[in-house]
Length: 324
Image (cartoon, rainbow, N blue to C red; front, side, top):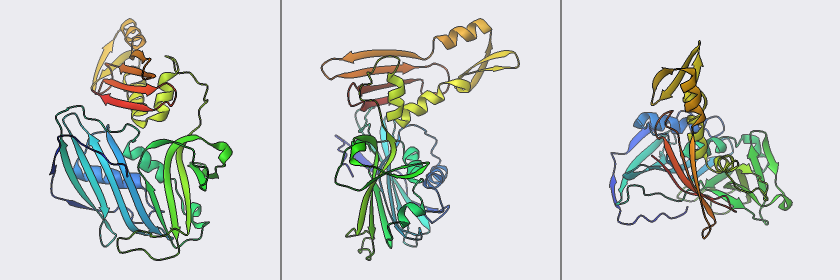
């Protein structure tokens, strides 16, 4: 797991640890997205932005029974950051959740933007099925990811692309690719005292949400947002939430604009004008850093109404993502 250094930080326990029953205590039969939604419901978490997976680790038997489950999720808010530590209970039937709050002097403290939304990554891990692991014939498996999108080019590892169509072998000729790397370790031996696998009898890399882009693609106003949303689930989520019926709707002859849950019926002329003017995008190219500075705003839909980020002209790496 990548280290995170917080300057001038005070950490305190947000609340007493809570125990939440599993919806389904089998990796193959259940859904990690469902488990995370259940945690959010139990903790009354309403935020849909900034909940990023920083670390995921699980050990399962070959029948899908959990031996270990660890998730670290961070919620990036304006004035502080909340850290969620989610662990499997000793009896393997529940999740134990602790929350800590970090206060900083900078109200827009942000971490590495290569980390992605927890729900987005867990949805990709949910694609790992029993047959994908069983063909390797191990008694137990350990799956780990730090939740970052990376440019992957490891040539001496066995590697597979995992998507909705299944599991596909990647050759060195396919590299490099962009995706979320999850390391998978299989063992026919027992686990150590901490519930981890000490030595792998089989190891491979699973590449989740793989993206292959035309290396010659030049970032410019008409391509920038489509590339950025491919590299950031949060950008994609904000753009979807600020388009279509989330912001406007033609309904039985009426023209409706929607802002923060309030609907306003307007004339066709106003409807057409307002929609033609949104979203507003401001761009600035920093020659020294070779990156685009992007500001996108839409006064319709639900808050936050403005999004800012930088995107590197060559690597397409997203940084400094903020919503307000």
